[in-house]
Length: 268
Image (cartoon, rainbow, N blue to C red; front, side):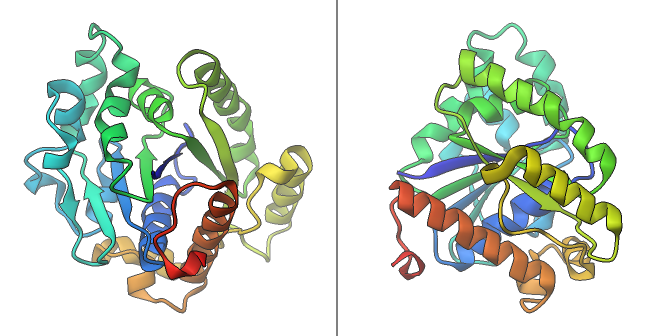
């Protein structure tokens, strides 16, 4: 049985999509069967692994609104043997309006993804920068959530609101939901502010903060323009190494907890 992890923060520009793509790619590189779910209408995760969203015929939108079987829309990325994609499309913008009168509208993504959990070790959901119905669907479907936090002052301001939303979902929609961890991103060792944010987040959230911190890195910024994760763009870059370390940290945590079943020698 696999684990569904949402990558969520209602603030834009904190590294959600970068983290979702590169964490999924790193898990796949460690030979874990991984599905990247693009739940953002901007479809950046879809283009970030080499697909043109304009060419996508069926996406997560059709799964949630029209009830299409998720298995029928999954694409093999062909860039890493263990990495698949559930693509997005700009049509997802309208899903919140179209789903408003549907019964159990918060559970449409859960209905789509849960049948897949025996096929994958990890399912990583890239959420949109909002706390709307699509993100609520992602958090309802997930076993846990990773919260990327940019190492800047304003990134801390929205964190309380997101954590409050997570508590509401835990109490009303998904009692299984846990915080996988808070991920510090865009860290610049030269800036005093970056170090202050790291200290403050670790002081307040302690064990919830990942040991791995994602630095600002040119290769991380370049790789989406090539339609590949950073591990394929420059495997020796700081960004690539950091996301591999994050993947190992998550694997270690989940293997210790007994989920998911490891298929990789890395977990031995």
